[in-house]
Amino acid sequence: MKSTDPLLNAWRQTLRRAKDRPAIVNTCGEVLRKFADVEKRASDFESNVEMFSPGSVIAIQIGNHEDWPSILIACLRRHLVVLPLEQSMNDQQRDAAVELCKASAVVSAVLSGEPPRIFRLGTADATTPWGEHSPSLLKLTSGTTAAPRAIRFRSHQLLADCNQICDTMGISDTDLNFGVIPISHSYGFSNLLTPLIARGVPMVVSRDRTPRAILSDLVHSNATVFPGMPVFYQAFYEMEHVPLLPKLRLCISAGAPLQRAVSKKFREKFNLTIHSFYGASECGGICYERETTNKEEGFVGQPMKGISIELLNPNARASQIQVRSAAVADSYFPEPDEEKLGNGIFVPDDLLARDDSGFRIVGRISDVINVAGKKVNPAEVEAHLLRFNGVRQAVVFGRPVGAGLRNEEVAACVVVSSKITEGDLLRCCRAALSTWQVPKRIFVVDTIPMNERGKISRRDLARRFSMADESSPLRRLGS
Image (cartoon, rainbow, N blue to C red):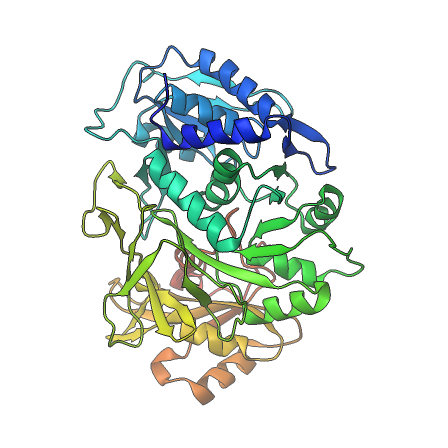
């Protein structure tokens, strides 16, 4: 019986066309799975999940394992709902996600190199009444709050995102994707996993996230496409004795803003340009910098193919946008938010500005700092700090003042490459910024902590450098 699932139909076409071709290789270029092997593993896994009722949620926590595409295909065939979990999650975070989404089982790779195993949970016999449209995938997101929630996707939306990415970026089955970003994250799922299934784009599976190892593996694997993050590109250009990357033709950066200086220095060192990619878990890709002009900080280019963007406040200097596309998710779970997500429309929390060249991200609604009633956009202060010679990174955040939480003061963390003091930076800010924009404190640190998605949390920095620590001497992160 012919499947009505769009992703499965696309997989059937891929299998017919590329059955005996390599689908997944390791970082040495050795073939781990041909497309026929992916299908065989999918059939094996399908027989292992027959006991679960359609609509049951199966959590997948296996890192960048070569069985990821087979497991997704098997779950789609059994009408099971896939819940990707990042491998870096601790037990408490995993348990909270499993409980939130009412998962019936967790698929886990206990030991590296071993096949994933299925662990049934106490809710194994429980199914969620999904209504008219049962999802194929639940993506976890914390949004602007600390409380996690999930996003409901059906297969046609996942396929639309895949097609928009491949068509906009020019990725085809003649390429070889380098898979070091987590497949469990929206970026990795859309740029690595679905292109393999729907478009036959082979993938390198990589588990070593150290920059030196990534560079070496890019060479040995002959990868042509590298979906990366700014933290990788910065580390690459700072290295000495780097290898040439003759096969690499496309460098993509997403997950966090790409600084102009990083893009420029990487291009000078490797003779490769970096294309900024802006997206969201709720809708996949939104904008892509095709020409790599990177003329201003935060520039993310034009809307991707199939994407319509409308400024909600077109007369303002910066505005939220409304995204329309076939890739937009159905809703949040368990509590919908119809004003923000639904009916093919998503409204991100980012603030964007538009000119003739494209869009530029200038901040987020949730990041705006309230200083005695005046609103401070941290991105503006960060841009000024980054102009100071020797400042490599800058993150600005608000710290609550007094007993109430409505008034804040501006603070910043910076990473510097020379003997720059807090006083030097404060004098620079006072000379050019309005008084309410000037940070009260600037903490010089060795590194600014990121999660495995390459993102920095202003909320976490505000907690770490709270007013309660004001009496302690200036400290460095990790000390």
